[in-house]
Amino acid sequence: MNRRSGMKIEFAFHNETEAAPLSSAYTDTVAELMESDGDVVSLDADLMKAIKIDRIQERFPGRVLNVGIQEGNMIGMAAGMARVGKKVYAHTFAPFITRRVFDQIFISSAYGRNPIRLYGSDPGICAKFNGGTHTAFEDIAMMRTIPDICLFEVTDSAMFKNLMRATRDENRIIYFRADRAPAVKVYGDSSEFEPGKGVVLKDGGDVTVIACGIMVSEALVAAEKLEKEGISAAVIDMFTIKPIDRELIVEYAQKTGAVVTAENHNINGGLGDAVASVLAEEEPAVMRKLAVRDEFSEVGPMDYLRERFRLNAAGVIAAVKDVLEHK
Amino acid sequence: MENEVIRETEKFAVEIRMQIIRQLSKLGFGHAGGCLSVADVIASLYGGIMDVDPKDPQKKERDRLVVSKGHAGPALYAALALKGFFPMEWLDTLNRGGTRLPSHCDGNKTPGIDCTTGSLGQGLSLAAGMAYGLKLDSLSNTVYAILGDGECQEGQIWEAALAAPKFGLDNLICFVDYNKIQLDGAVEEVMPLESLFMKLRSFGWHTQQVNGNDPASIFAAVELAKKEAGRPSAILLDTVKGYGCSEIAALGCLSHHMDMPEDLARRCMAELEEQMKQYE
Image 1 (cartoon, one colour):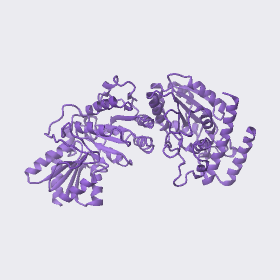
Image 2: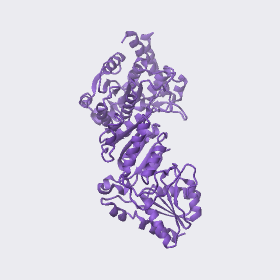
Image 3: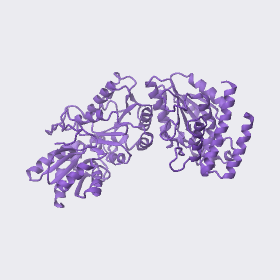
Image 4: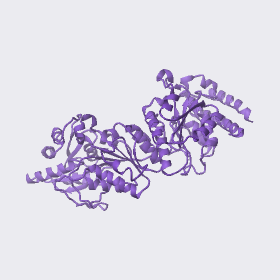
């Protein structure tokens, strides 16, 4: 399906959840990269056990660190290590690795040209039982404003591992926004992704659904249901939110004339706005943004939160029907 | 330390102060007080303490300096230019459009600047990370940091102050430019730090407090700090904001960022030239 040279996509979607948690893709790949590159270092702020990265501490003495509950210093130390040539991966929950330390990322890392790699886990409603205080609905919006950043919202394990390998030597800040819990499998393990290029998972002629993260599988489910109703929906996994794939957005806006974005984020500043700004500049098309409508989050199980914020296939279907009424 | 080195360093400090005044008077304003107060520690670092090479400013095996109080850039630029890291003429370009010498230190613009700073509170973490990274590479070089005293009101300084002893960073030596004055007034009035010495000591740092406008004291303190194994060192520098230029020193907190008209610059230069005579 993908005509792009750098990609090799194996579509493996059967709406089934992976056995391993998504965070283990991160931890396993950090270990793999440490094995092959002595400059790789991992930092955490008292959430090592949450992603089981403490298990590789003995294998790599001195390179898997816990800085305690001090995210600002973690980013600063990571930037300092980058300054002397280290490839640093830092993890904590999404709100703590973006909102809490935005100035440290912006100044110590980005402005100072000391690039680091960040894993913000449990973004948006994935915070589940940790509730509103632990929810980041605005991290994409904030991180998008940092010049030259690479911002990924990860769909499944195969993608996480492949993107980490592909960007090990990147000389810019990389933000991996990804759940910890097992993801719905979309890609086969041999898939290779090209940063900055969206993946067309299903072609269609009536409408284009551009999704990321936990909304990709929901978009695929929605597209199947819409097909039965005679609506042909294309589905794109826009896993790189910055730099965004302008060419693909324009191509599918021209092809289908209607666009829906779907994301686990506030409606302000996320994937929807990134897509909208491309459309506004290059190919105006009728569009709907499925996202959290400028609210704070709340606590609860995933099913409840998906329903509460309409971040599910039903939400995608409703948005598609709405946009088609205005096409 | 031999008397000759001390004497040369004292002279270097006066030269640095002259070049600070030169830079600030060119545009007519700048961070005079805080630049003048650190001239002696900068002179000591580049006058013998630090292992650096103007011909190879990026060499991996070198000591590093993080001037966390990034607004002291002009003091550092003066030292770097005098040591040959870049042409002296650059000093006339401070803060002009397209300059390589911005008001706050920029590690990507200026040869010899090891780290970008300016947003207060972040430098000690950067220095700690650099020190940790050098240890991972089994390099024996030292990372020096210079913090402002007012800057120590930032929470992140205390995060880093907890972390550096925890990671055993004995290759990190942190100076605090303890001139006791910040932008809005006396540090003890705005947000008291006392006892900074006891606070850092209780955090696990090897701690000294010396006359920070005296190179001999600074050399001696660094020598002692370097003997300390297993933990980082803090050296509180008792300094005077605006030291060396009596009119600027008399301004107190008004010298943080001030106008530098020609006539004032002329009087400061005359005073510094007078100081220079004892080294001729």
